[in-house]
Length: 323
Image: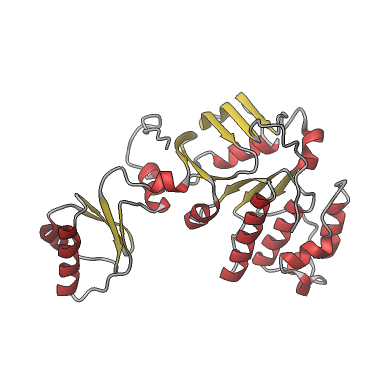
């Protein structure tokens, strides 16, 4: 899929610049003095738990929300004041809505293509997103995954310079999910800036050049997936069956063991061959099959949970981490 961007390569300013962004809804502070910059041609994942402020942040970038304080620039333009100039260069993938219920995929995509000066061929795009077998199906009768594919096509038809993808693989089967990932990679290869919001942390780890994690409206981590997942102390992580006797395991290893989620464990302590040997011996004695074993590296899920889990701290006491 060709989605050649319209930007001038001589321009080196960020595709998106957010400075001191603040947004309130009544007494709720949704975004709290957020600073972010997204480079041109970068795939950037914005992560956070529900209510963290990521949707509000993206909506301010898209021009749907007015900041209470701070500034937002997309391709150097104000998303609200310069909306008419900016819209032809931005693609939006929404989770729901925006399509007439009885319209068919080709009709919808042909209509949207007329809004742009140099759109992609709707028929080629429908084939690339795997919708050629439902061209005569009304939108309301499409499956959730098929609606997602059409939404992706609508976001790409105008050859955007910047595209916002909101949960792009929600409802997709594994094959369709991989197809969507390939589309994102093609966009990056073509120099398109992609802002990705997703609850699938493996998706962010797989696709993103950089990841920002926000919580309670504030930035708590920023860096490449490798930077964020590199452990700042020796650790072992392993997978096995859920519900291991961690008290017994700790007694054998001589260090702390935590089950992060069902079947994934973190061993805290000096990483040495003896520790690995004691772990293997304990598992063998209890007839437990080892799944994965990894040293000195956390998953993005571990990083995310460690930074965003509610641990009773006040709203503004979170440690800000930048890799």
